[in-house]
Image 1: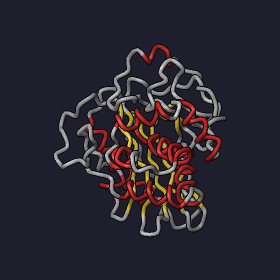
Image 2: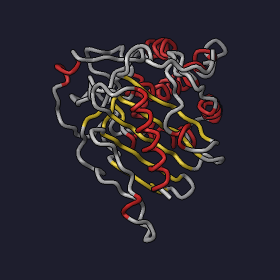
Image 3: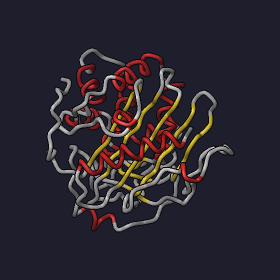
Image 4: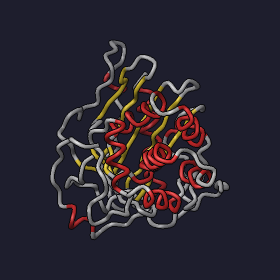
Length: 301
C-alpha cells in the first residue's frame, strides 16, 4: 500500500464533487507507475488473443486472477492501479481489529454485519476504534502491501477513500488464507462465504463473482458513488504505511469492485476493480462488472 509512484492529480478540486454512497466512502482510480499495465495471461500457446477480456469503453479496470495451488498469476491487467477502496477496505479493518483485540463476543455481531452485509456503521465504529488511517498503515506493514494508503488528510473518517490496488488485494487474501492466525482466518472467511444478497444500505451486492461464477465462493464487494439509496432497492432480506499520496481517486465517478476466492479449496483469488463514467447507474455498472468478471475468469483458463 505504500511505495508506488502515482501521478499527482487534482484531488482537491475533485473532492468538491464527491457523492459517496457508503458512509465513509469515496470513489476511485489513479494511474500508478505503469507497472503491469497490459493484460498478461500466463503463457499458454492454446489461448488466442480473442480470449482477452474486453473492458467497456469509458471504464477503467484492473484485475488479477491468482492460483494458490501453483503460486502463479494466471491473468493480470493494471495490477498496481490505485482505486478508491469503497467497502473492500472492511477486510483490512476486520483483520486489524482481530490482530489487536482478538475475537471478542461483544464485537462479533458488528464484525459479522460489516463483513457479510457491508454494514457501514459497523465499519465506522471499528475505524474510529483502530485510529482511522493507522489501520491502513499497520496493514501495509503486516501484509507487505505496496500501493495502499490512508484516506486524504482532510477526510480522515472516510474509510472508503483508502487507496488500494488489485495487487494489494491479492496479497490481502493470500495473507488471510495462508498466514493469518487460524481463528482469524476461519472467522473472516466464514463471513465472506455467507455474504448476503443485500447490503444493509439496500444495495444489491450480488454482482461480479456471485453472479458470474458458480459456488463455492467467498466475497467482499465494494461500491461507491451511486447515491445514498439505490434506485432499485434490493429485495432479499439482509442479515442482521505511509502517509496519503496525492493520487487521483476518481472522486465524482462511481466505483464498483468484486473480490474474493473461488473454488472448494479456495484455490483461486479473483479481484476485479472498476471506475465508471460519471452518471453511470448502479444497474449498468453491475451488469458491466459481472460480464467483465465472467470474461476474466474464462480468460484465466
